[in-house]
Length: 401
Image (cartoon, rainbow, N blue to C red):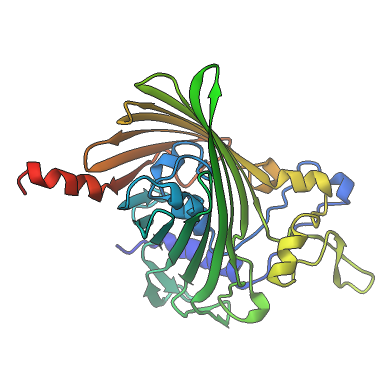
């Protein structure tokens, strides 16, 4: 489908990605107040929740119980997964209120090597439909189907009865323009290699005589090289992220359980400084630090470089809170809330959804309700389908195929 409405969107994206972004002039660090100063990254599709379970819990997934989608949230959780192998597929419509051919697809699977080790892999594919390029005179200048994808492989190992670690490797490719010239500059597909380092801990406890499980998780994701669509001078950070999560699952009785989850996330990417013109008319940094640094330096700098000081650093932490109720481990009801500070993007939304687990497969559905501003997933149903191959194998002697 040819969507001319995407021409403007694509060209705007290319313009943003081909030229360095500077923060607007915000005033002194003590006058920042409610001014916008967003941390910019390339390939933001890497931060989108691929599954409807976490998507229905306010995008909280770092420390919830292990499942087939642990690759995105915390690969270390795979070491505690119950089955020996499994696979899943999810589909997320994007900007569905505006256009009908942008979507995010995700397929993932895992296989247990032994009692301590698990291997996993996944593919995330973001399709931006089909665009038509025109020149300044409005004449046809080619067409392209922009897309982005990431291929992951992970290894998870059990270190004790309660603690595991994981590492994942990722190849990322983003082709937004198909090699077209944008504002007189040649463009190309951008590529990056990245890694995740993760840990997971859980322990059985008792709360008011209710059997419970407390879990903690940590994942530093997308540690990788800068990415560029033109030349190295315009390279940008990918969304390197520090995620810390906790969850508490309480068995209310033999049939009902309740899980509470909270995730904190912060991009390990430099904050844009404030620029001012000097006496010679040159733009210089007035507050903050130079963001054009190496990846290791940028990760460390991200903790203290905000032009608004420590108060602004705290604003760069975004929160995800979720709740999950299960009946007989077969039917789930979920809800959650996601919060990002007004000066850092102002993404705020409630989420809800359900889950259904049958003998062979599990189906999860999520729905997002935005607050204050529009959201690409507003009023959109998201679906995830997971397959339990062990249950399928167990059912073969009794069922006809």
